[in-house]
Length: 191
Image (cartoon, rainbow, N blue to C red; front, side):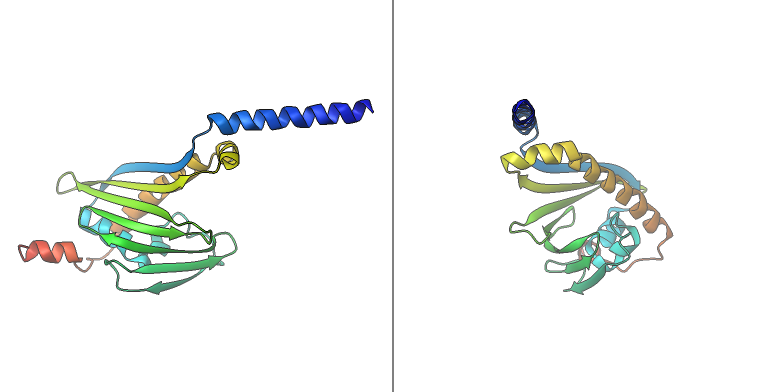
């Protein structure tokens, strides 16, 4: 009987500790990372807004079982990438808003709610661009907060973003001349 009381007290104690962690853990799943990269805003925008290029630089490209489907016109609202793989699971990403300084993407990981990703491109000079990549996963349910905090989910996503920045910069440096995107065409036409 003592063992049952000990196990019960232990489980209640663990539950109380986990509830305390959920109480102090962040209530949302928002991650942001930025990096100054060598290249123009146009070249980084081109790599980000054409999903056909993501398999070259994306930090999640390592799932060799993944298959991808692309829809819509690159560099414009509605361009989409759908994936399915053992590690990545099933999901999609679609450009919701395409702007010259920022891009908004909707992410669907097969759950009931969609998530949002934002990209910002600020040209510092002829050689460098500040690129910011953010993820807004929204409010976490109370009992999930402790799990995500203990897992270090925000740190993992930020680490992935930093890897993506490095590979995106290398891809831009080694890429042949890219076609002009809509922002560059408008700029050249004086619009």
